[in-house]
Length: 260
Image (tube, rainbow, N blue to C red; front, side):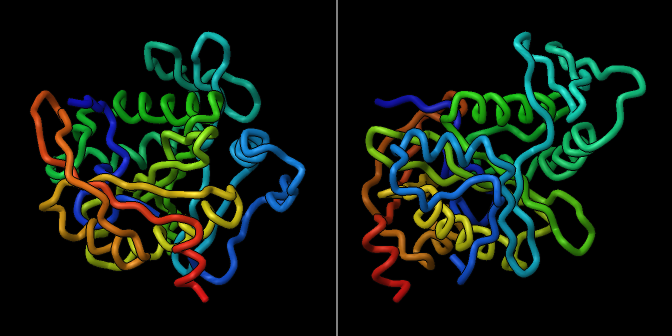
């Protein structure tokens, strides 16, 4: 039995484990159409850029901050905001700390953990650890996690992105989480469609996969709505227990065939 700590498709609370629209807005700092780049070089250049993707109501962006060699979280000026033991430096303010506070606001709801592979955030330290994990994924070029901002109030309402990015197989796993108060408002589908397009158009992935609990019908509906197909059911250990998990997938060819 394969063991998993952090299931990509199990990040959402109700609907959405993954992530199209006519045009994807991205940073001018990279050009994903450069065909001379290897897959690894292309993905690295995208992850290193200031990724920003917009939908009608949402902005998908990277978390603020960076990591130093010791693992401290730094702001844009190189000042330590969170130490390695998650201590907040007295007087530290700004975007990094604000990200942590807004992530905690949605991720602390116990309902978020009912159909996910992670526990709800008990304290702000859990949200700081989450930010550190995201930044580490940027550094290692193994994941591209983004926060989801509501344009109406500039508040973070969830997170989405790609993890387990395989440069050898040129594929990645979708992951998605949105705050309980935002379920049923179409935010999941809006973000998922745009991110799927970004994965195939900009990252040039060959395949996107996602995992979910079978009873998470909202998540599965979002997957099928963007053309993902059921692949298999398999046993996974989640939170110390074994569950049946379903895998869905869509290839580049399938995605563009349905988009015509």
